[in-house]
Image (cartoon, rainbow, N blue to C red; front, side, top):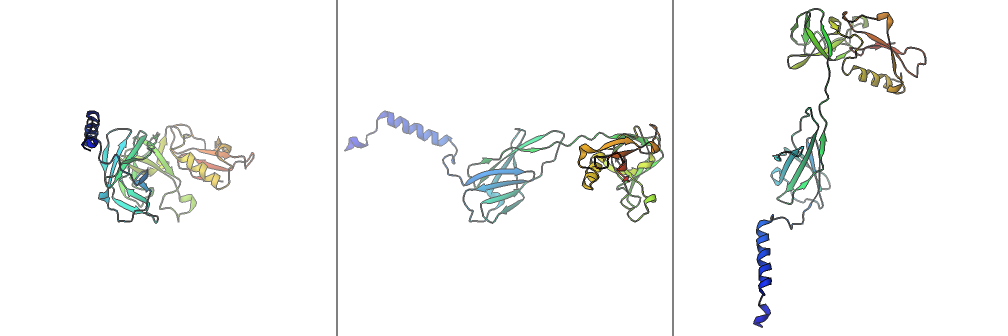
Amino acid sequence: MKNLFKLSSITKGLICVFLIILTIIPNNVFAVTNTKKVSATNGKVTVTFKYALTTTQKIKDFVVTQSINKGTTKVVKPTKITKNSTKKIIALTVPVIAKTSAIQSVVYRVSYKKDISISSTAMVIAKVPVIVADKANAAIALVVKSLPGMVYKTLGTIKAGTAVGVYGGVPVGMDQDDWYGYQQYGWSKIKYGNVYAWVKTHELRFANPYNWAPGIKEKFENDIVKQGYARDKTSIHYKIYELNKLPAGTIGAESYQVYTDVSGQQCVVIVNVKTGWYHG
């Protein structure tokens, strides 16, 4: 009977090895996890569980880590927990990652109550588009406004002859809605110090009057397609508006005559390339 419980030296050795392994492997390696999936969007990490969570969850129940472009892993603290009606899905509000000049690939790992941590698939954050400024200079001393309109805060002035980069424009000032059409005028978006600001478009001398200001062409084409003046963007064609033709270096913005497959040989509208203002 004593021999029944007598262990061989090999068996004793295997038991020792097993006990040593147990001391060095993670405590939860043999755990049956309830966490099924982790997914992420910018500012939110969603955790899906296999079984409904019957208790109330707290922020401290979750350990969330973040890695950007396979770099250093850091802990991020959720600020809010939302559980859906099935009690199987938890949405964690996390800090939004700001766009940069480079594409960012972000991976989150989530552990619930010291359970096995689960990784999300990579979330890709697009880079900030590079906007090339339209070159101009101040034809006269410019009054710089915080918003496109004379009633808004004055940020300062720009001396005549100063180089100015234009980053967009609007066809009509925000304070001009109840003005007559002939009284209205456009504004150009510039950088004044470290902030975007606005000046009157007709007080600028553009290096190239026919160059579209950033964002204007896309916005204009989207609008005339929506209005039914064009079938799609590929059907839009432009011709210099000869009656308003300006030589380079003169004050003001140039216009194009716009043709589409809807209009045949007739001009649909005339558009200002610096503000997007157009008329039939």
